[in-house]
Image 1 (spheres, rainbow, N blue to C red):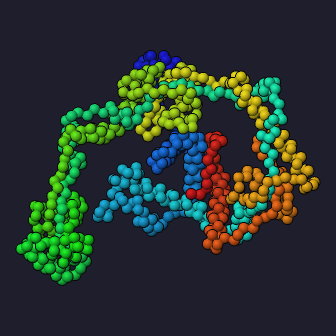
Image 2 (image 1 turned 60 degrees about the horizontal axis):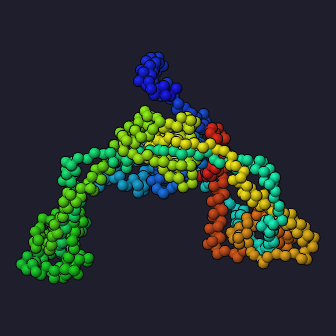
Length: 638
């Protein structure tokens, strides 16, 4: 059907046009705008979260993470767990917003103004005269000041919902002590290990055993489905290559930005400063000016004495001892009146008295390094790269349309798209349906792989549509060879199965021996053989497995020494002799206070989580999509 559509697409488009226009007239455009966009993924108090909203929010969050951590594994960002965590946060925010609205929680104008005044990020958007630069703020943040204010109000209101719970959380000293002691609880133990390796030589495995195991565990010996693919990637770098820059534009750019490619003019001057702050009384400033006029007359009569006069009279502590020397500077390094006077002088000239906010200056220009502008040919490549980069975003938008059309119009080959846009066709073998560890680019993008492994793509081996795989990055691919999941032949895994059977049976023998020893030593302690005593706790396991630590700490302290058996599964069996409780050295008062505070924070977080779960029930919040097995933990509070 799709082949027919592609072949006669112009005719079909005319027919569709004739069918769709009357329906727009009869039913209205708004009926069509929502088509395909109403898939519901969550619901809070009767209000839905749709899949496009979820996708958009996840895109915003992943873009922010990429900006903050460019080296983050893209596979993690596109995982089901991360996507589900985004949805959980969206549900949480809406539940808390509903609770805040129900309780009429608001933020006063005074508090909001105080927060905005103290926000260093907002200070960067103020002009020198103290006004707020609305246009710059909107361009940088993508939001109007009103939208930003509304989001801050909403966030602060929702924070109040949980603050009323966490701020009243109370942790009695007895509860804190019980929690802390469980963490620091220490035991002295001795261990007797019964490792499977010691029993492996007693295990006999026949070919019949191997064949039976293979049949009973077929799912363990499946080769996963894989595909060999070819694919194209269009990104800003690729778009940059297609930007055409003519020689005239390069030269115009050079002329307009010549100073950027060379060194600016530098001037070296010495000065004499008589300080008179702008806040000083007028009489004091007049007195300082008169002193400067007197010194100016002296150095005008004898210019060679300028350095000596500066040493004796200048009140600039940074330069006076150097004869007033300020070293070489460029424009922009000095306050405006001083800079204007210095750059108006010729080499060797002495200025008149120059007034600045610091007082009165006399300037002696001692040297000039003229600006150096490299020839056009020397910086041509740099200019071309800059111009291509500036135009790449615009070019990418045009190239993206061409890319999308080309991979669709010629569905059985990527070459036309590659030729049109000067892209390189890349190949990859043994590509799995889900991102492989260490995968990068499109091969780490779940949406791209889903499109590749769609039934139609596998069957027809046609191009996928253009898939967004990153910021300003599109990809399209096609399967050239597909291998479905299939059982691995018995001959290829025979040795592996033999080793697995030996390990399993040896572990059973180890457990049997361990349980027998435990029973014998419990009845009669004589003859028991244990390793050297070690002191263990949850903080310091001394290389012991966690089940051993848990078993030792669960032993009744009033009945020591005690023997405990621990089944370690594939690692065998352990008999633990718990000999005594080792008291903890009391911590310093400051550390004890910190520990109790940490327990209090944990209790507050637990109460927050419990209260949030109650709110979820109250506002009938539910997530309508399946929860992935590898979901990341999400705390109720922020």
